[in-house]
Image (cartoon, rainbow, N blue to C red; front, side, top):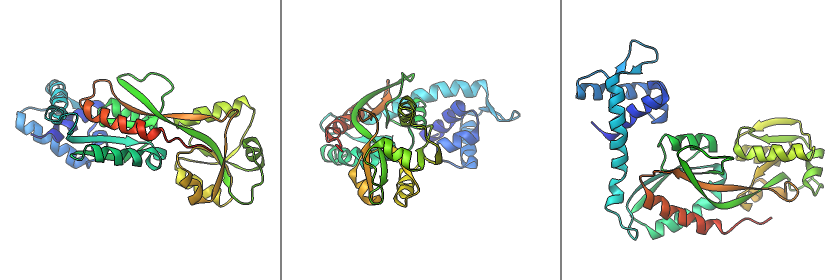
Length: 295
């Protein structure tokens, strides 16, 4: 029996099927099914009722899940137990929204590595709503996301930087100097409406009666940058680095009156099993976040 097999069983309980669990734990469906079967062989009992579609946990399976969660939490604390605050060890699994990957995170990672060379950070990217959900299911130790609009059960967060929200347009060939003028003169390329930051954008567009008719809707900042660069329209995005503007040959003007920003936070479970690691990384983020982008 391994921790990974227990994590797969817990994922089956949380997501309702082997196929959904397999996606969450980055396994093929046959591999996830094999892990559950191995647990059944080891405990000599059925953990899944396969007569139902999708298969459901048996009472024995549900009982094992309760204990497995405790074992997984204890396992995560092993490195904490042998670490001091000056010499941290262990692995911190984090994820971040795309803008942070090119803004604050590189500086924070350099500082963290220098201060704690024996600790490791595994990093991936995603979108705020899905990352918050993965945190709640303990698939991540921490996540860098847009500040939520309200409380999320079991999560807490610390704001460490602000990103200006801007209208981007081609650096050449656009003479308009204000956000209103740019949005009225050019087609609008919308940043995915389901992103949390887009709530701020849409509310201000409605308040100022800047009615827009999007010609496309994209969830990749790089794709938006390319579309704007080639003159297909203008867009409204959070900006974390001037290098994005230079790379795509764009200009940016503040969006809103006064210019709006979004808070970026480090979110983590309230009962985190890696308090020292997340605290150390949070300190690095707070220091890196002081270097705010000014337009």
